[in-house]
Image (cartoon, rainbow, N blue to C red; front, side):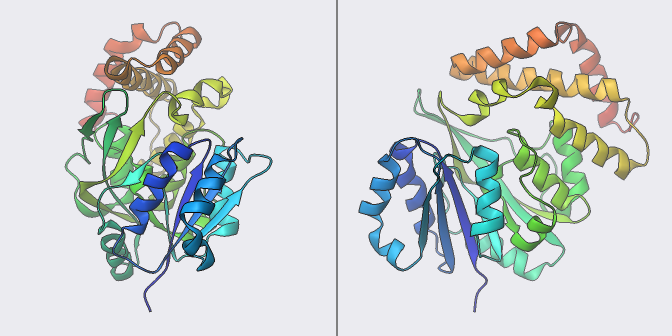
Amino acid sequence: MTNKITIMIPTYNQAQYIKNTIDSVLMQNYSNLEIIVSDDSTDNLTNELIQNQYSSELETNKIHYYHNIPSLGRVKNYYTMLHERASGDYVLNLDGDDWLSDSKYISESIAILDNNPDVMATMARKQHYYELKNEFIDSKGFSHLKGIVSGNEYVWETILGKAEFNHLTVVYRRSEAIDNDFYTLNNTASDADSIFRLISEHKIALIDKCVGVWRLHEKNATFTERKKTNYDELFEFEVNVYKLASHKHKKEYPYKIWMKMWKTQTVIHYLIFLLREKDKNIFRFITYLLRKEKNLLFFLPKYIFYKKISQQGKLL
């Protein structure tokens, strides 16, 4: 009997995208899976679509559908699915506007996890789909890392901006994730915070190919929710990563420089998106950050210097 995987699909007013998401899961060549659609929508369109399009999957419990009234909110929706509704040995979280593009990815990930008990998760690359331009761009990858690697090494490469993090491609162990209290950081970095804590003292398998698609559009939670977050909580994830890195390296990176680096890197990251997508929500978030951190741009030369010496291992 093969191990079971739960595909968690949180969604909010995404009826125009959800069929593509669900179908990409049903096209996987791994049969022992369940799909949980946890719907925070304020309309009934997603409910109607699923009842009409997937009646047989609902009857056979291939798909479990929940319409959350009242809405749970993004992070609580993740938490509820994992801790209360999922039953698989493994889990993948796929937001309701994204999709899987490789029909063999689930089986490939589970084969790795089944054969390597110290590997807590697998992760592959993704494509960015810029909806307004109808353009696909491959993500950059994992720096020099490939195959099964130390979780701490991967986290550090991500901190340096050299490796990417892709929540939509992460397949992880459910019981260990629950033990690590996944999805308790109440901001948009809750996914990375959870995965980093899970793998920090274990291993992760990095698969160097694009297996899923992140759809970028004007209602992306990444851009619309971050600016609503209390500023004191906005970089809580970065503080947690700082603690992980300091513990691992047995010495402390200068905290003020650390946070300035993260904030500067965040502005650079969103400026790149702004230049490509010209989205008003991205512009508002960058303006919000710069208003809160008026001297951030003056830190840019120091950012380049500190990032260079930290990559050389001289500062941490």
